[in-house]
Length: 553
Ligand code: NA7
Image 1 (tube, rainbow, N blue to C red):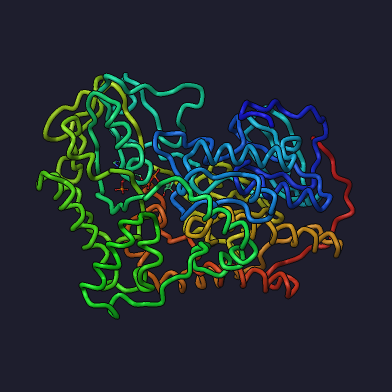
Image 2: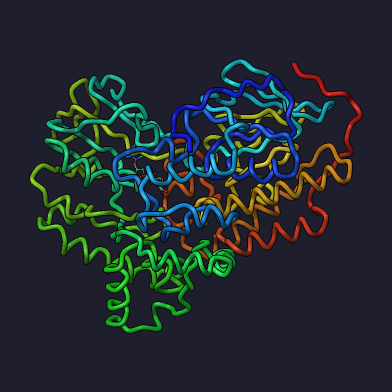
């Protein structure tokens, strides 16, 4: 089994492919596997020097899977993978997930078609050849009939624009671009963490234990619940393996793609005492289940939501000894409407003598300078700055690529006012370009490896359909994106998600327009896209194959 070392670029000279896949994370690796199995000539490109995508870049201390629980955050397509990889913990850490993805790359013989350390710099559609022309960071020109963007929903780092930040002279790391070639040593250092989303909350307790002093710069206090991480019970894994076909079927029909049977009880069906007992039980067990398996209306009913919000606030008041610090940590949004966080000792970290919490809402940053950060109330000298400031989520990597579609139109021009798509898989004016976990798909609100498989399978079947019918190009017909956007919005309106500023709505990126770009229908979404395929792709404009000979640049 090969290690996680950098894989050299493939020596193959050929520059024409059926499909170019951008990204070698969970999505891109599966897309390669399933497309190649159909005899298509596929090449995957990834900027990283390892497979793994998100799991390659996010090496910050404490990075873990938050989806419940191992072995369900994994590929489902192969029983061998399920049976041969042993997950040691319920919430696997980054290193384990990366080891898994390397294991898959070897086991499925994927590496021969993956070119690492190579970024796709541009992609433009050529009408006459019905091909995408693509240029890599190595200056190589490529052509392919199809491009699959598997470039990650959480891959484009949000680098905050704060006065003076570029003058900070100490070490500075973004959690989503953590060094791959060295261990960051916090011992004896004064550290600041900016941001308290999942990455901040996961890393803060560990950094606090290692450093001399930690300053947490918090803009929005967040609800986090204990991860409840522990070794996986071998009997649990044995049972999962023995019942795998049944488990897989169940994962496809639950709202978030988890194998657990969702509760059908509403919060108001229980008395306050019963609710407390339910929440306490899930709090003790730990994990995401407290938000997805306790009451069925937590994401749809403000009363229900408030019962859990208040339960967690009570926990914060109980855990954090200094009432003034506890007060700063109390969240005031609807629980779960920002990405729910799992932690290992987060709130308790604020009982440590070497930790200072700065509430940026009351005490905003004035500027960074060479030796630290100055907030309105005073100066905080620091040696290491950790930017846990998240990502330009869902659309960021696509917009950074900014492909040119029909008539030379750019994606950024098309997405100026709205992130339009059809089925969350295709974009008007961008023929033969597919997205995995793109805007208006379930993406980040579904089990992402499973969602990647289902979306990749749809793309594969679409390509095979086109080949069988002699079609050269497929793109959304005029207007279908508007109807699709309305469908996505109608699902969203049934929930509370839009009421909160979050990266789901684009509110974390200054200047980004506000749009809740996730299809929260889960299984209903997948049923819908399957129906479109089964009905011969209504809503798409299909173009016969041109007879023009393709030409590599
Ligand atoms: P998140 O969840 O977007 O969290 C980013 C944090 O950084 C959040 O607390 C932000 O505050 C804060 N932030 C961002 N920009 C600034 C500026 N300019 N000033 C102060 N604070 C700022 O990203 P994560 O990496 O933690 O998690 C992303 C996902 O990755 C996660 O859900 C997992 O699935 C993996 P805000 O809340 O916007 O006020």
